[in-house]
Length: 452
Ligand code: UD1
Ligand code: CA
Image 1 (cartoon, rainbow, N blue to C red):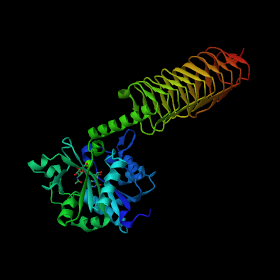
Image 2: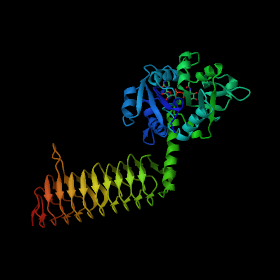
Image 3: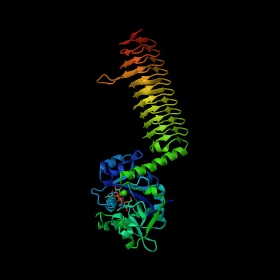
Image 4: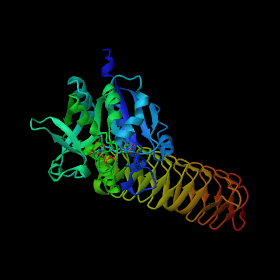
């Protein structure tokens, strides 16, 4: 069905404020909830609404906010050079809506839990009741610092009064303004210029549009939501932790319902973008972050931290730290292993205790069981790396690679001084210091290592 022009939707997201109450050097909307800037959550919920235009109002650290949003290609930016209040923020966005005659969703970048359902409820109320402006409210005695919805004796919304401007009587009102609205673009063009900073904070309040609309006999609507989570406007780091907790619980619930066991949700941290296949167990104290992907049938943890890594199926990873690593199927890692960027562990391999691996390929079925450093190294299949082996990849100036073939036996406490190659089937004796290439199938011992 073809939409009527007045039913088209645009969005304005206000994100110019400093976020004074965060007491932070970072712009408030860039503070992460469960690993990603809170603003992203708002922008993502908007993706579920068919908006013609998304205007992001930036100001404080505007360049950083703009840069952070580079992946959101559907944004138009409006600058608010000085932050004179939410009404002023909207005034700054108005020129971007010049030729737009539909309805405008007005949101704040500090509402990471806003849901698409609530956005649709606002739009539906606005269109179905033909309201000039529709606000979102909830009954919550807890949100003491939110604006109060003041209704007339017959129950119509009369005005919003900010907590700081409330009389004692108004302060007792428990219906609060959640800070999301839908308004006709025409209404905004007509009434935004009339806002006055006549309040405790000497700001232009967007919320005063309600009173202006009422006085002009415009239709004002209110969607009263039960979804109190979506109201969580993040103003302080305390609010941030609360929002993060809600998102974390949602993520864990979603995983558990999809067939992932999370043995102790309280002590488990799994960020939003992490993907885990069913039949994998996540043990207590585990932290999975970034774009980590874990296959089915794995046991992860206890006490394991994995960032931006890909894990295959049926692998065990206990008490270990992985950063940007790739682990294939049926691999055993830990306890106490450290896989650094570009560590690639092939199927059936084992990486044991106190082993650090960086920028290296460990072949299928190869074992690096204990006390070893492998850096800038390629190891073939079914090779055994003895306890205490070190690839000496750094000569003080440059890094060099080590190559170890298939079915090699590296004796305990060997040092492999790169660049060096150990041919397939070769062996080194315990304590060997390998400074020259070792041909396939040969055995070397000693310091420096020589053929036996
Ligand atoms: C606002 C509402 C309040 C509501 C609450 C819900 C007003 C006047 N008050 O208060 O009724 O209960 O949200 O969370 O609107 N911003 C700008 N430019 C500015 C000022 C703010 O872009 O000049 C942005 C901020 O970055 C923030 C959003 O607008 O993302 C809301 O501003 P904030 O100062 O947090 O408003 P509240 O005091 O929370
Ligand atoms: Ca706020």
